[in-house]
Image (cartoon, rainbow, N blue to C red; front, top):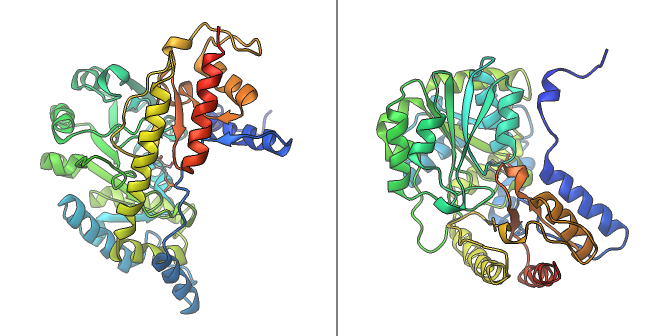
Length: 400
Ligand code: PLP
């Protein structure tokens, strides 16, 4: 009998991590590899936030805290939701965990029974379907392709909802496409959810502050106050605050749900890192000036990458509203053969051959539930991006 659980067989290892590992192996063999797979800013954590972490250590703030966050951080989270999103929450409606990932996981573990369904627009962040399956639920994938700017239509959402639906997971700006929903586009989706009172909304607003060209971010409970009592608004400091390694995510929603999430966390990991919580207080309450400066760099890189990739024959690269990803289509390359003799039957074949023959690591679209595409993270230097796009162009030009 296997030591491994049946639940584990419902889950796949992360394909994004597999790509990174393969790129590292090739680099270790001395190959010149440019990695465009990372899901984190290349910028360092700002000094004033680091200093708050150092102060916490020096002040002996190194002990256990309340399971789902210190009151000071919960207050900072409440202030953030009021300031940025016009949403009022009390401390009792706030949960803090070890990253946005744990927030989502706790919420799914706390709410799903076997057979419960969760609607996930594709392309999706790789962890959503697997977290749903780990929690015993069924992921119902609703396609949102390039023709709608990678945005789910109200009709597609309506068609995916059944009596078994517990959650609709919403993510804007999105990983992997960077697509951001306008207020009207989001309102059209919340109108659908309003017609189905048994469906709750889990909104993953992790990329809220990474938006360009004046894009106005909005979140479901703000656009449709009627959903306030059945929305979990999730966010965190990982991306915009360049704090991926500090592991702080947070959410606000109905007290009964927050209490259930606390129970799961109390019997699994307990409080998120105390030092990181104090750093996150500074991140939320302190100066945010660095975000605009970082975004100017991200926007420049986005424009560089979109311009170079969209110019390649067979590749179509839409301009995303936010995050730090682009998600080009390679529909025009399927069926071709590489200079090395590989046939590009799928986007996975494309990514494998691109890595082996051109030394560029990207993540293939099937990993995110929508093919034939690949994801490029542009959270790396302009020089590396420019060289990588040149190599992708030369690789594609060599296809027959
Ligand atoms: N949500 C999305 C859409 C993400 O892309 C990520 C990280 O890649 C997360 C959540 C998780 O963030 P954290 O590192 O805070 O767990």
